[in-house]
Image (cartoon, rainbow, N blue to C red; front, side, top):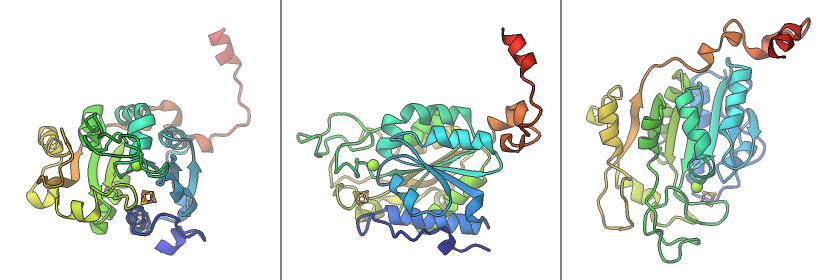
Length: 295
Ligand code: SF4
Ligand code: MG
């Protein structure tokens, strides 16, 4: 039986003291242990950012790729060995900015991957520029007169793009985030878990305290995640059409917004129906008929 220690490396995280990334790291380890997994049974793909630095702190099989590109390697890993538990890790700048194209197409493709996004509403690693989820009007290193654009709403985006498990968590709620990661990994299909992850160094608006005053849990209010229409209405509660106003009162729903059962991409691939690609023998492969058919 594994323990959380088994999922740690000798490198203690280099995140700023108090960073929300510590909460996500804790919940991932908890979720692996809760499912009875050993480190070799999990493969995690990382993008670039403070979230991607977790590649050095998590003892699992892994791949630390390029900025915004944690999904393509995760997809390849899943197709090579669909028996593996595959998790992708990215940030808001990573997955909702430079890698947004990958994110949307992975959602509609419905590979069995759990995508955990560290959404701190800022580019943290590059020292505080506005990201795709920064609130309108926010003054950052890259928006000294206030951000003009509206923020992306990851939950509404995921529901409309075809993700089959769509959740929002808050890095300060370890119990709920662990449950959502376990749920996402057990779900057969693409799971988005958008985690509100306070950046204590560069985001002085969306702090732990700020979230603590606003978050509420959907399941405690009787939300039905199988109802797409209701999920959509809940998604509209926050952060639709936000602008910076520290005194405004928001209610921020957290939990599982939407879940549906739909065939995964890999389950419809005949070539790997009998066994994972990595278990196929490379001996006695004759590609002559294929070459003739394509010539
Ligand atoms: Fe965390 Fe922000 Fe520090 Fe990055 S810059 S480690 S997101 S607190
Ligand atoms: Mg970020």
